[in-house]
Image (cartoon, rainbow, N blue to C red; front, side, top):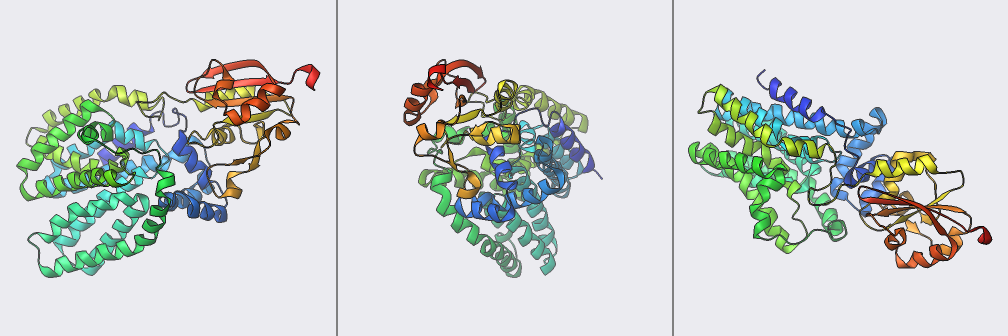
Length: 467
């Protein structure tokens, strides 16, 4: 039962202020996808974000039972992180002893990234859980090479790819555990297990590749600085990442074959992501979240040479180092390098001042800000009418709607108009695309504007002479 304490600790840490940070853009995409009728969700997956399609299908079933509050959306991720911590403890106890397992699970529990992605309605926490499960099942299959054990491993690898296709790069590290010093029968069974998982994942990979340029058009080519900064980026805290991977490096050097194999399980996916990022838009540090349990295992293997009390003190110190990041991620899920975006504050302004018959315009409408999705989530049926809407996201099988080609005609029925703009603007019209500015300026005047973190809200009305 040693696994119970890290699991409970992780669940407790991730549950603290689980719903405080507003849903951010990616979570709004999850809500938009998972809340659609099943037929429309399948159409969406055929258009964009197919690699997240299995997660959306899982969340579709979950929301039907649990609802779509922020807590309900994020709870599966919190539970997955707790499960990952528990399995990390079990794996650590198996490889390096009970003390190392306990320290690994607790170290994983206090990482800022564990809270960050344990509080996010996206598939990364689930992928982390499945990565540890697949590795644990591999260890069992290597202990006794029975077909049911290899079938369980193949299922875990397939599930890992369904949660995060890139996370299948984990098998590059597994290959070293299997192909070096093992009998041919064991190697063959591993290859069959991995090949079976690959065949199951191939259609998803083909569809995802076809959608990649549209889905990841914002991703740049990584440089050497990005590679060197991965520990801090993945852990979500530079100091904690440096400490974790420094201890892990010692563990690689001091734990023989097991240390080297675990080290490769961490290193090879990072190198593969970096190399692939030179060829195609793919380098997103959070895609490597699944390697952190293995880094924690290596770090714990180093700490296990100390007395348990001393090891726990170092784990606690790592938690304190990450305390500022823990507090920050509970305020916003936006990147630390970007300004926070407070969707709830913006929609509260609209809710407090809107009247029946009001319309609303979103700008921009074709990027990843998802202003219309945020308004739909927080205001539901009480939101102003989307006056420029021509074809909504469900009809388009997309995350973006189509606006009417003649804005002046579409604006004609309303006398009061809300603008919800990405960014903070002293002049709200400065945030409106040129194709819409003329129609707005010629027919409406600015009554009032508000700025909230990351957004501008403005209220326009028609001059009495034009009504």
